[in-house]
Length: 427
Image 1 (tube, rainbow, N blue to C red):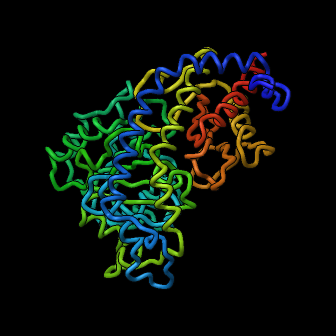
Image 2 (image 1 turned 90 degrees about the horizontal axis):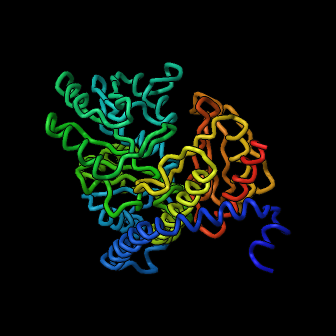
Image 3 (image 1 turned 45 degrees about the vertical axis):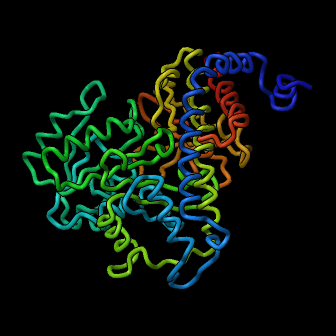
């Protein structure tokens, strides 16, 4: 039995859908080469750091209690800092999400009366309650602690407002700026590292002491360089996205200037203790192995995103980024135009997943989000968006955002299932 017959007889994929995705793949192959080149470069970078710090089985040992002198934990921090060309890093399995990791950075460097400015418009939904833009008073937001907030919106064409950035820094004493690399739920290009460097150069040219914090979620190992290579004071992300390589069960990381990473450590544990305590509890091996796998896994995700873009372009839908555009994160947005299609797309991704394929996701009022959100994630690690997943706020203009895919050959089925359900809505 060939693949087409197997898909049709055992998985219910029609010959029409098979041809749509097969033709899209034929067009996508030429765009895969860049992702594979980046993956090879980053794989060597990671391997070199492992060799430099003489990684051995002893680094996988378990500690408990206070976790003093945890060799594996402390060496992982050094390995991560080396890969990111940073002065210091803190990688912890018990940082529960990217949102918490970013919040740790903000609370670490900001004090009452300080001002935080987002330089690329509104931050991701889950950060709004952390900052105090949205939500009830008295929850412990930055606003509750007397931290002021402002933002520089993107220009109408979705590009960075450099004049606006310079002006606000001249008008106000700004303690820290937040730069979000990915588009979030916006319809625009995500920021590449070169542009992040240009933003940081603009900030430092006006206000050298302002702390530049980059939300690096979804962007690690997509390019050959990271924001720390272009002057970021702190970069931060989740280990159940790119940097955990799908093997990290949970966690987050912070990397950057030593003095700021030290402050983050104090916020994470307690002043005086910082990142020198915290038992690894046997998680070290999965964090190391996930980091080692990350460049390859990210490449699988990028190829999956390109295939999805090609397939839906061929069906006449607008996508962001376009199939032939250079990638800087793993997110692929598709403008479907109708809530029913968004729901069907997510249900298709779910049905093509290895876990909970029998489940049909529906929109719900998810904590931290303003609109109802639908999330498809048939993942081995709950909520791990490095695994094939899709989500969307149920609001106009009804865009859906797909990311991840740790095995390209399997992810194709998820795309076929999504295509199948969406085109049925058009019939």
